Length: 125
Image (cartoon, rainbow, N blue to C red):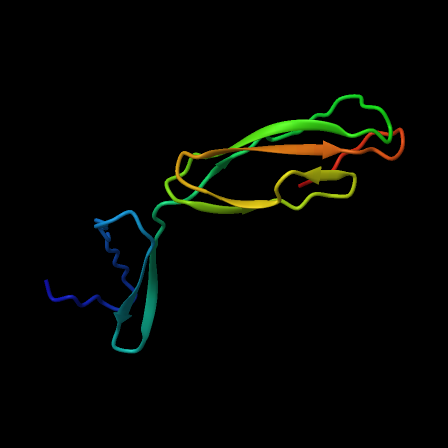
């Protein structure tokens, strides 16, 4: 095979990637022609951390100006140690705002809700 392509023709290549370890890889493949040179980025994503956390926290009906607690378990179900941080809106408190979870490790957090008026609350963490 000469490696040359006629003007106006297309050519495609299949890149076979065989990683040696579960880590991120980043390569820039340089392609040259008679008139131009361009780079094709080749990226592979290795292990990722993933935290198992409830989609919703429902406190139900609670008394106004009274602290209501809800325990929640978070768990690292990924393949990498992860650092986490949760920002809470006003009227909410958290027993611990940040931490580190090893692979497979779990931790209990206690959310505290302190409503100041009688209404429905909805917010994001």
